[in-house]
Length: 253
Image (cartoon, rainbow, N blue to C red; front, side, top):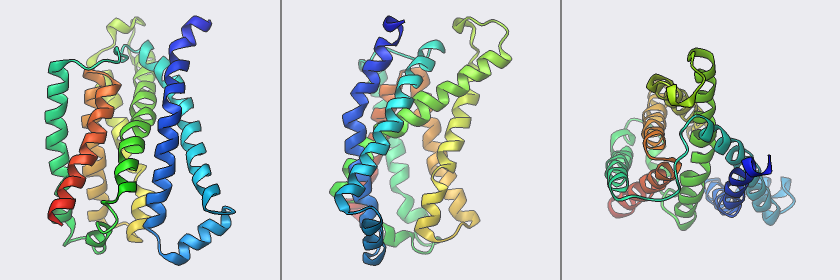
C-alpha cells in the first residue's frame, strides 16, 4: 500500500513550497488591487497583514496537497501521467503554443479595453513583481494541479468508468479525454466569474464572453498539453502565457 502512494505523496510534498509562495503573492497582488479602505477592513478582520498572508499560504497548501495527491493517483489510473522530464519536440510544440496563446491573451487590453468599462484601469496593477510571481507559482502550478491534474483526471476517470465498457485504461477512448478537457476548461472559466464580478462590479454578456473566451480557451490548450505530453508541460505553458502577456502589457501599455 505504501509503495502505491509513495509517488503521489512525494508529488504532493513537492507542491507544498510552491503553493505557499503562490498563495502569499496572490494575497499581496489581490490586496494591491483593492482601495485602502477595503484593504484595512480585510487586514483588521484577519488580525493583521501577516495573518492574512499565512491564511492565503495555508489555504493554497491544503488544496494543492490534497488535489496533488489524489490527482496524481487519478492521472496514473487514466494513463495521463507522464515522466517528469522535458523532451525537445514536446517542449518546442509547447513553447510555440505558449507564445501564441500569450500574445492572444496579451491583446486583451486592446480587444476589450474600449468595450468593458474599468478594464483598462485594471492594467495599472496587472504588471507588478507580486503579479508576476503569483501568476507563475499560483497560476502556472497551483491552478494546473487543481484544474487539470485533479479535475480533468477525475472527469476522465468517471467518464471512463461510466461509458467505456472495457475497464483497462489502454482502452479509454480519445472522446473521454476531450470531454473531460472541455468540462474542466468550462469550470476553470466559471471559477473566474466571482473575481470578474469583484473587478467590474457586474456581469454583462461581453464580460462573460471575455471570461470564457480567455479562461476557457486557454484551459483547453493547457488540458490538451496535459493529455498529450504531461502535467509539467501544462504548467510550463500556463506560467509562460502569463509571462508573455505581462511582458506585452509592460512594454506597450
